Image (cartoon, rainbow, N blue to C red; front, top):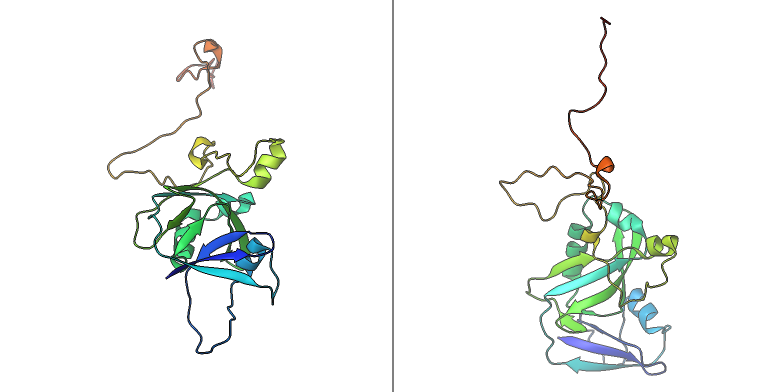
Length: 202
């Protein structure tokens, strides 16, 4: 069962599943703190809950970590995929919290396909990361709104970062290649060249 939760005051909304039903007749529901923060509600505020009959299955989701420390962990995709097992659906522009190794990481849902609200139950979901928010702010980039997506694979590879596109049977030896090498041949790496040194002079 999927539901849409809306704050009646500011009309913010998100979507979620059900953890459990309580055996009482009171019109009370308990939601996680991150949902309360997303909807900008406090304990005791009134919300509207609507049943959602069907949502399209997700095929792609892009998340933007708010700090680059999340991408420094050993396998951020594996951590995210494990965390998403607790979710039934995703809503674009939601901010979700991930707790890992006694730290809390904030991730913004910046893009979803094929719709802005999708179900992630029994689906093949491709996950990607946008450039972390603090890294964009450090570079002074003003175009860091939620609709601007810079896939992680377009960034410069970090040493020690796993290659998630690796295929068995292939060996890769990546090198940093200077751009415009045709215009600047002097900057092109030339193997087996140099002045050379000798221990004994003639």
